[in-house]
Image 1 (cartoon, rainbow, N blue to C red):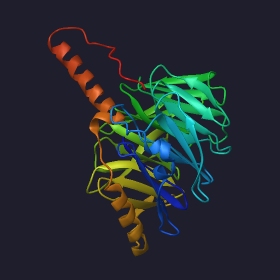
Image 2: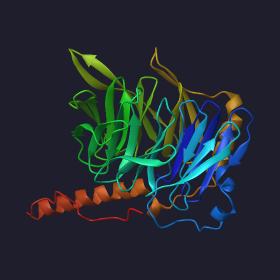
Image 3: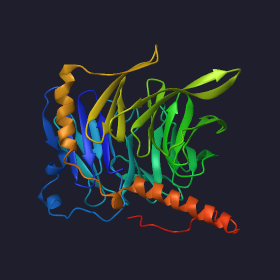
Image 4: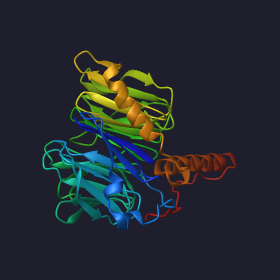
Length: 359
């Protein structure tokens, strides 16, 4: 995923790794700022990295006062004060970031990387846990006692925070990379390239239910007690919720929204869901009590959508550097090899030992 969108109550950010742009659009004033242009002359003179597999990452703190993203050049974490959009600091990463989140109360920046490590960034970076393969998503419990991570090797893991080496449990139920996780009504919901959503008991790690969506899952986010599912290379997003029947919890599919172009990324703030598609930006409002999801067509938002859409049109996608495309193609290639081996009477290859660059 070489594009991403992040939102707060006052701002919408669209970022691209390939062209190294990060635009901030003010919902109050309508002003636009390219953060990458404020990283200094020394940064500008570094050539754009169009070789390494990367993933665009960006996040606001819960109070909206801080913003962090990963520029293209070098292994950087760029942190900004959103009051006046001044640069707070650029921190150096050990490896390219694959996920950036803030802790919900203390505004600590948590970064997962391609090596499989997770760092907490306060005054100095502290490695809090590690996986055997690259981290693909992170979420922190509201009480900040637990951190949930998922990786390229089919695992979901619950660990104590900040002592992430103290593992609570692993959850093993997917058959491909786990692309997204969220905490949903005291459960863990995970989505995978194997096309399934899994609902896990947070306390003991038991698998409670599994739902197949027929297409590889790209992202899973929580909004207003619902989860929104983005599919790989799809024009659809899906809304689901948890439901209890006869003392058991299930995943219930609520509705599907389809857009004219492929959905590239999702972001939520409060009851508003922002969807970045191939040529436009959409906003839905979520009504939790009535389970209604409506796209906002207010004329006042037309300028916002037009401006953000025009910014996005300056982006390009280089498939050879897009980490999520690489993982999907790698999964498909492995499935074809297993199928060929079975047709030839050979035993299936259970482990793909091919290594990839983790810069």
